Image 1 (tube, rainbow, N blue to C red):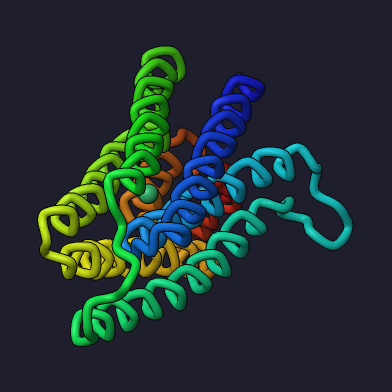
Image 2: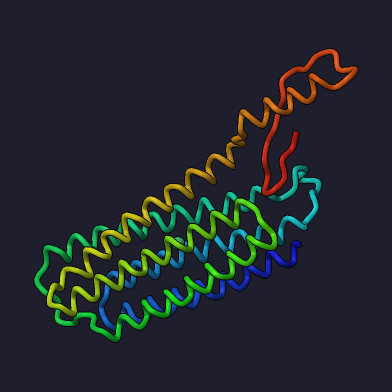
Length: 241
Ligand SMILES: [Zn+2]
């Protein structure tokens, strides 16, 4: 089971990183802000996948004298730093998109060739969607399902970048900047979500429903006279109680 999960993560990481490289290169060569912004989105997804992969490996590392709860929080810490970095980059792209919208028409405009990078990324997204759909059937789990919906959204955002370039080819050169603006805002939302989730993890958030369940089970156990405060915390995939 463990091998299978890291295998899926490794393949995804490689695929997403290749999409990042292709989109960034084409975006720079053909001067498409939309493509570059979408490539940064791929970079965010790579960071998240890499952190999950490292966390899965670190999780094998047993608790030691200095980390008696194990090393699961490293996953949250890595995600937090990654989220902050991408948030700053996304803010820069929004600023850049707005600036270019009010600037004169640039000399180099992205054309049909730039779209091939978008088509490659769509291929990567479809590959990930199929891979995740297969893994969900075999392994199941809410994490994989969330990944599945995220991959669908990635497909949508790449389509936005392509539509932006298509608009440029029909003479509306601002199309690429509007696409970049839309993708930049999406990236801000995604990175804020990641920052919020990992910050909550680091401050030991736990579902009150889960605590209530534990209290219920303990109270209804024969021989138990009373139940005091129940302390729970999550570290990586493990819940301590
Ligand atoms: Zn994504």
